[in-house]
Structures are given as C-alpha cells and as structure tokens.
Length: 351
Ligand SMILES: NC(=O)c1ccc[n+]([C@@H]2O[C@H](COP(=O)([O-])OP(=O)(O)OC[C@H]3O[C@@H](n4cnc5c(N)ncnc54)[C@H](OP(=O)(O)O)[C@@H]3O)[C@@H](O)[C@H]2O)c1
Image 1 (cartoon, rainbow, N blue to C red):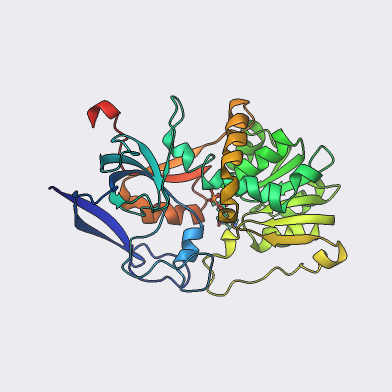
Image 2 (image 1 turned 180 degrees about the vertical axis):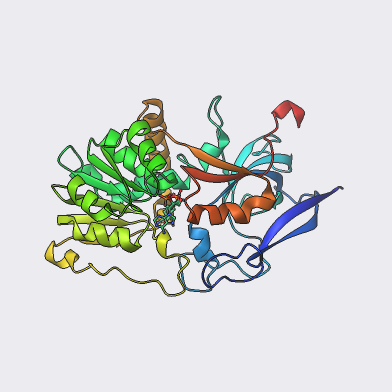
C-alpha cells in the first residue's frame, strides 16, 4: 500500500461580496491511501473547469445544488486520468470526467457521477469540459429548449447573446449563426473580444457593453428588435435587451454573472416589456436535460467537424492558482473556456 500527498483547496469562509483571495479558500496537503476498495479507481486530475456558478455554491442558500460546506474541497468538474484501477471497466490511462473538485487526486466509485471520455487524436480531453462538456450542452439546451430556436431560427430571426466571447456564449452564438442562419449580435467586454466574435466566429455584429454608446449601438444593431436573447450576464445588459425585445420574444436566462458577487442583487427595471410585448423570460439548469446529452454531443461533434463551431480555451497552470482563475472569470480575463491545468496527461505506455 502507498500513500500519495494530495494538494486540496477547501472553502475557508463564505464571501459576502467579491471572493477574497486571502480569506475565501485555503490550500492544504493531505495523505491519500492508494489502497482501493472493490470497483474503485484512483485518478489524478488533469484539468479543472472554472464556472461562474461556483460563486453561487459558496452561498448558504436554497439552490439547484447544495452549497459547498466550510472545510470541504471546492466542487468542480474535472478531467482526470486513471492511475490505478480495481474496476475492469476503467483501465489505467483512461480519461474520466468526474466531480473531484479542486484537488490533485481522488478515489472514485462507479456510483459517483463519472463518465469515461473517448479521446481522439487532435482533440484535447479538455474539450469535454468545454464545447463538448457542460458548457456546450448549456448553450445547446438553452437555445433549443428555452429559446425554441428550431421553430424560430432563420435569417429573419435576430439573436443577441451576452457573455458572447465566453465559454457558453460563444457556443450559443455560433449555433444560432452557423447552424440556424440567424442574425447574431454578440455582446462582450472588450474591443479584442468583439473582434474575435466578428472576425473569428463570424457573428454579424459585436458590441462592447463597456462603451458609453452601448445602448445606442444595440438599437442600431437590432432594427427588427430581438427575437431571442441568450443571457449570461443579467444586470444592465438584460435591461437593455428587455427594452429591445420583440413581440413574443424569448429571453433565455442562462446566467447572471454581473450579479453573482452582489450581497443583494438588483432586479431588472424594464421587465414590464414582457407584458407589453407578450414576451417570455425563462431560466433553466442544464442538468435537467441529462437524458438528452448523447444526441446533443453527437450534433455538436458534427458541427465542430463541419467548421460551424470553433472554441478557445484560457488555461492557467497549477492547482494553487485555481482560486485566482475563478476570480479572473469575473474580471473577464478569459476568452472561451476557463480551465486550470493541474498535471500533464500521461501516455498509457508510461503509466
Ligand atoms: N443555466 C445553466 O445550467 C448554466 C450552466 C453553465 C453556465 N451557466 C451560466 O452561463 C454564464 C456563462 O458561464 P461560462 O462558464 O460560459 O463563463 P464565461 O462566459 O466563459 O466567463 C464569464 C464571462 O462573463 C463576463 N462577465 C464577467 N463579469 C461581467 C459583468 N459584470 N457584466 C457582463 N459580463 C461579465 C466576462 O466576459 P466580458 O469580458 O465579456 O465581460 C467573462 O469572461 C454564467 O452566468 C453561468 O452562471 C448556466
């Protein structure tokens, strides 16, 4: 039997507003026995997914998932590699997506929420946290189930996406543009990101919400108003889009990152547009569509092959930098999926 030194990051204190890099989390080293029970596997974490929702998991409030407890390893979806196995279905070297959290190693049972990932040459396993992971699935089900894009999509349909240069937004915007041929306007927080949206992802228009002329620019970009608004940010951007919502328009409430650090978030001022325009605003949680993930991944893999879906990643190295990586999401330091790389993936022959 051996013992592994495992670095973990645990929740130390619940933030009331912004995450405090000195107080919110603490790093610790613990010993982990590599002795495995029946059907257990020992994995090392390769990539950690960073998600704005993590800010919500730090609050002790009713939500779609229980809060992370004080002194508990911070929750995250991870791409891991099996380094020891007592389970015939998982071989040493296999890549597994699991919820190990912010730590270097974990022992998993088949009853844990784990998925063996099929790897392909040229496709990084990190893709299964991004465009082919929960991120891409969120864009897909938000658009299909809440936005009903299959019914409404086409050249006469104007779609606006906030957080458009981020992980979820960039996938939603590209599906609307390149799969359904909609007029797509992406909203992001810098000129560089706006260039990325139009020049690399091929959106019709990109608007910088930090510009003083943002609302005027939004009005100019939406002469036929907004049929579908895929909202990742909430706040003032949501208000601006409510003011431009079309008759029977749909607002897909995917996220509200602009409010996640507020002690008391403020609501939208212009929600009465939902009444006057008989529009609908609806939230969703991607996990509700778990039974349909297979078909969605098939569709998105096809769109990637056809060049309709491109993706970028922002990768920060070192487990000790994970709290900072989370804060960087709130500062807009990422383009595409934000990840922390914890360890190198080993080729099977080396394990
Ligand atoms: N409903 C679900 O099931 C579900 C599942 C996954 C994610 N989500 C939600 O989807 C949204 C996007 O998540 P993601 O993982 O794809 O993250 P992301 O968009 O890759 O990263 C967050 C981005 O938000 C933008 N942002 C930060 N503060 C902002 C502010 N005050 N106002 C406007 N934009 C701001 C930043 O871009 P800029 O530089 O453009 O500001 C940043 O890059 C989040 O709200 C998340 O909670 C929902």
